[in-house]
Length: 166
Image (cartoon, rainbow, N blue to C red; front, side):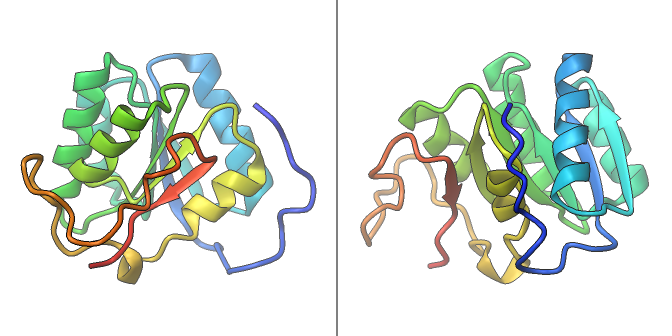
């Protein structure tokens, strides 16, 4: 993963609680370093599985979950579904090596607020973390429903995908 050095400008991300979810410990440590480099989080907790992530989010009530969806993939997508139904709902940022158009679309459709392709730098992660609840779609489009307006996912592999509000 890249580390970009001029990332401390922009929106205030202070006092944010984050849960980093990845099945591999060394990758969670990289995400932790990027988060710490991006801003001064109040707390960063880590989970290594879907079950651990759901338990930790329920107990700690973080503001943001940064999730690698390769757990395998379907388990990661199911994790997005479950996290999206929790109250209070955390912002869900997928940060993954899987960034093909179908995977990005599936993650956004299931409730991810932003999608960051790995290797990611601090600037990309900071931009994704800055997605506010007002920018999040109120409902998610069922898989068989076609969007009415042009999809922001026309460019299949951007560094950061933000969910458009309806």
